[in-house]
Image (cartoon, rainbow, N blue to C red; front, side):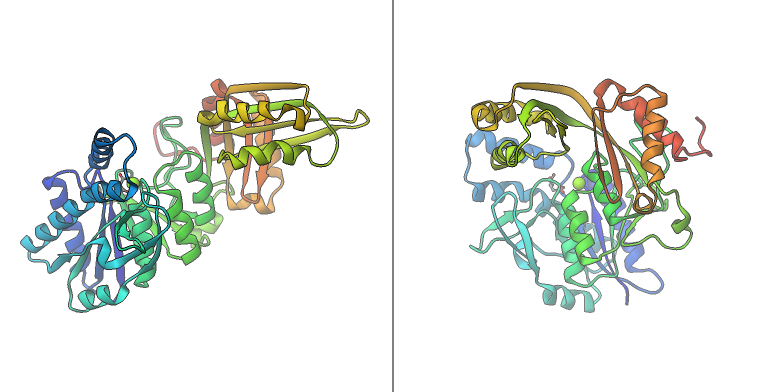
Amino acid sequence: MPRIVMKFGGTSMAGIERIRNVASRVRREAEAEAGNEVLVVVSAMAGETDRLVQLCREAAALSDPKEYDVVVASGEQVTSGLLAMTLQNMGVKARSFMGWQLVRASGVHGNARVEAIESATLDEALKGGTVAVIPGFQGVSEDGRVATLGRGGSDTSAVAIAAGVKADRCDIYTDVDGVYTTDPRIVPNARKLNQVTFDEMLELAGVGAKVLQVRSVGLAMRENMPLRVLSAFEDKPGTDIVAELSGAEMERNLIAGIAADRNEARITLTGIADTPGTVAATISPIAEAGIQVDMIVHAATPNTGSSDLTFTVPRASLAQAISVIEQRKDAIGYSDLVQDPSVAKVSIVGVGIRSNPALAAKMFETLAERRINLLAVSTSEIKVSALIAEDELELAVRVLHTAFGLDDQSAAA
Ligand code: ASP
Ligand code: MG
């Protein structure tokens, strides 16, 4: 019998009316003609986890992470019980579990990792035709305490449980109906993708398409667990997230989407000696400070003995990065330090980039036609990114979306 995991986010669980809607979707899958074994993973009601985090802050500015977890994990306990009783009330056999019964976690409290799933406990419930309702976001740590998986962590719970019980697929029901070619707030006729690969999704998610917690996509990729993102409110096909495109989708556009990221700030050091070790002397202390360096462009000016280094850091970390560098001015030996917080990154993402160098050229030509200046460029197998002025970001996204044939022709412009 097919085994499926259905995950519902906070908006879908916000209130009894919505929980009833969720329950009827669950019933439909559980009572489908072929019959399905169904596991449901739920989030807390929208806004509830924020409220609980705030209560912890009020109680103690620096709280014990183990007690923080006891508090913030409670939101999912409430929704699990409510959904199980709603299902029972509809005549569907269901029961809830708590994280400590099923999900073994390790690492730091408040941001723990899933180590293992007690699948035997679940197997037993499922064999008896019971729907298992499981709170997302929580597990039990090695020391036997409640542990949470980091904000947005119930996506990761769902994928880990799906992998642990060898489910056939993991459906993520949310308040959007799929993954789009770009942010529909920038391009109203962005198109919903039928399929996207795990690695494309990672690039699109990492740069703003916040449909799924990035960690859950990485886990699904490692476990080869097919995901589907779909609306909790409307019956519409969603987006399949898969290892490789199949069927008609193989003929899909070479570019899956355009990602936009405003969370970048640029630092340039000029007049660095053109000798081994200068890039390491700059980047290592920044990494040691826990700051994520994104784009790095380093080039020596031939025959001058001098080089320039440009890199980007998250905007919120700019001041800290500058102070780390200034403290090491003598060791690095640069002449000028220039910072610019008003930059943004636009990227084309798609498995087609691997085999088609003309796509990067087309991106640069498209931006040049609009006189958008490139401050830095970086590439990976499936992504080309350009750093540009922040106030040109929306224009860049729109022209690239059109140039790569992504506009939805059927929608009114
Ligand atoms: N309720 C948790 C949060 O808001 C986990 C989740 O919903 O994914 O972060
Ligand atoms: Mg979420």
